[in-house]
Each structure stands twice: as C-alpha cells, then as structure tokens.
Amino acid sequence: MRDDMVYRASEASRDAIAEALARVRRRTLDIVDPLSEAAFTVQHSPLMSPIAWDLGHIAEFEDLWLVERLGEVVAESTLPDIYDAMRTPRSRRGMLELPARAAILARLEEVRNRTLDTLARLEFSPSNNRLLRDAYVYELVRAHEAQHQETILQTISLMEPERYVPASRRRFEPPGPAVAGEMISVPAGPFEMGAPARPFAYDNELPRHVVTTSAFELGRYPVTNGEYLEFVAAGGYDDRMLWTVGGWEWKEEAGLVAPLYWRPAGLEGPLSSGEATEAAREGGVAAWARTTSLGAEPLQARDPVIHVCHHEAEAYARFAGARLPTEAEWEKAAGWDPESGAVHPYPWGEPLPTPDLANLGAAAFGVSPVGAFPAGRSRLGCEQMLGDTWEWTSSRFRAYPGFEAYPYDDYSAVFFGDEYIVLRGGSWATDGGVARNTFRNWDYPIRRQIFAGFRLARDLAR
Image 1 (cartoon, helix red, strand yellow):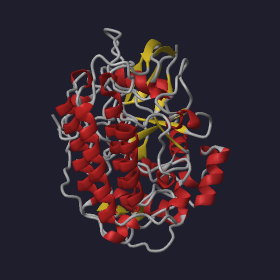
Image 2 (cartoon, rainbow, N blue to C red):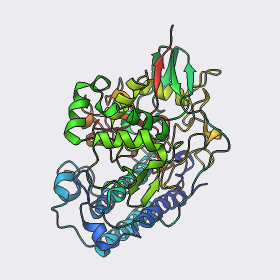
Image 3 (spheres, one colour):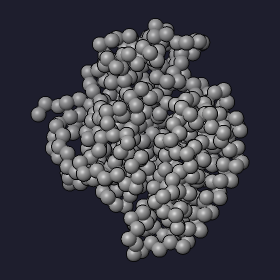
Image 4 (cartoon, rainbow, N blue to C red):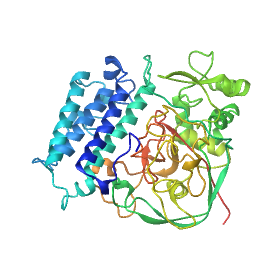
C-alpha cells in the first residue's frame, strides 16, 4: 500500500483509521517542514491563504468532526470564526493575527490526541450514526486534510523569493513514444454517472444516475506544452476570434500572454504578447522555462501544459478545431467499460492507485510526460486521466438529480450555479485517496494558480 493510501472503509478498524490519519499527517508535516517562519505566516497571494491558516483550519476541522461531533457536544458545534472559510474569506486571511508556527503544530498534535482518545471509545457496529457508518466521518477528515495539502502546494508554487526544496522528488519517464494529439472514439449511449453511496463519496458525487452521451472523441492524453506553444507562436493570445467575450475581456485585464510561470530565457520585466509570440516562433520549447519556488526549469515539450485558466483552455480548443469535454463525457471515457457496461472507480479498474498507474501524491512535484503511465489507461484507451493535471471541462458546477447535502451545506450546495467550472482527474499534488473518476473539483474560470490543464474533445457523426 502506498504511503498516502486510505483504508478501505468496509474493512476499517480502529488501528486502520488511526494509521490512515497518521499517514496523511506525516505528509502534511513533510510538506511544510522546509518552510521558513516567514513563508509559513505570510500571505503569498490574495488568492491563497497563509499556510498557517490552512494548518489551523485542518486542526479545527478535525476537532469539530472527530472530537466534538462524536462526543457530548453535537450539532451546535461550529468552526472558530477565523478558521471558517465562509466567515473569513481568503482576501481577509492575510490580516489575521494567526498563531506562530510552534503553536499551530502543537494544536495539530493536541487535537490528534483527542481524536485518538475519542476513537478508542466509539461504538462502530451496529451504528445508527450516519457519520460512523463505514467510518464515513474519518475519511471525510482524512480527505479534507489531503485536499488542503494540495492547496498548500499551490501556495508554495507562488512563493517568492524563497526557494522550496522538497524532501524527495521523482521523475516518471515514459516507457516508449507517445503521439500527442491522438484521439480516442467513445460510442454514443448511456452509462451510470456518479459515485456509489458507499463506502465514501462527497455529496456532489451523488446520487449515481444514468446519463446518455452522443458519440464523441477525446484526447488520449492531455494537451502538452509543445502543442500549446504552437498556439502561442500562432498569435493565439492576440486572435480575438478564438476567445469568448468574457475570456477576451479577462485576458486583456489580466495581461495573459502565456501559461502562468512560463518565461522566455533572458527576458526580464513584464512580458508582452509580441515577445511571447516571437520567443515561441524563433526559439521553440528550448527558449522557455517554468519558474516557480522550485526554481527555473526548462520547459518540456511532452509534459502536459499546466497552470492555464478555463478561458485559455477554451481558446486553445478553438484554435485546434475542437472543444472541451463535458464532465459527463470525461467521466464516461475515464470509467466506462464498453464490453461489460460496468463503470469503474479508476480508469484502470478497481485497484487503488499505485506509482505505476498515475502521478499522484506530490511524488514528482510536477507533471510527467504523456505516455508515462500506459498501465493506467482507461478501458477506452485514454491515459493520464488521474494525476498530473486537473482537467477543465465545459460544465458548470451543478447538483445531480436527487442531490442531498451531507454532512454540511457549505461543502457543495453554496457553490452550485454558473460561476464555477468543473475540473476532473486530479493533479500531481492530489492525494491518491482523493483522486477517483467521480471526484468533482470546481473553480472560477479565471483561476491559474491551480494545477490545471485540459484535454480536447470533438463530436463524431451519429
């Protein structure tokens, strides 16, 4: 079992629950250990929380759900205001007087000890407590901390001027050539979309329901840096016909000329679209680097493009004579088996993720070249659908038919509507116990600090 893997809830024991919580905590501490005190407490971007806030929120969320709501204090308990994401939005968190590093780490340990004390006293089976059935609430808290690890890693990528040196870093190399731009045909017809109710799923993944798609084709791989550079070289950021009205307005306002962190070698100061186009035409991939807190790293043509917003993904898709997939199309291509009609939780089937199947859990601290995980392909033949990059879809974040908010409204229901776009698949920073075919991420279409790329879709004649 990989270090980041969660227990199977149906097989959960007290020891297995405790070890799953310990595994995710070890990774949290490993991620923040290289940070200086200043990097720990400062707000590096108004888009992100101070890392100290994330850790404090992790501690208080665990205390709320695994101590108070499983003990004598039940439904009336709430998060402290400063750690309540709805009461204290990110734009205000940099002004908070947060505890020092040592105090926050001590609070994490204190809450964990209380969690384990409560765990030792609970009666799991038989249980009429829905939170305890299949150890639901323990997986909720474990997954919550794992998701904040990815948020912290987004913040670390933005961190300036401090360099970040991860404890370990692995490069996954493909076993053979891969053809960027290759498409996979997906037949028309129904499939079951969404997660089974057990052992664990978030409320927005439920209930499972039948969806019928028309015939379409989907990229075998995510769009690569090399492919995206062709869009830059062709002047795609200056071609208004490729952008939606809202996308063009945002591109102009934000001054977008290339993916976030891309930089031509030797150029300093603000980068113009003309400079970006010239560098792409004259120097190709070799002229570019990605510069984050990890340092400047040469751009790799076969790596999936990452840190593009939904507007950029849509513009590239038009440039390529394609579109973005709906989330139903994405999920069908990821999980549906055309021979049996079954729907699997992972592209490769039923087994939990392992390093030969997907780039997850911050093992690489970056994306892997397309073709690196042939064993992880879906039954239809699409590869790298979990890990590497979140993938923008064309779908707005809405409730499935029969949706029921659980265990709290603020996780999903308050975000449903047209403001948020669904992303699928998980990134290199996503925990292996979180990534699955049915998991729904969502964000504003302008966001680029998230680890997001995309793959293309096209309609097929009926």
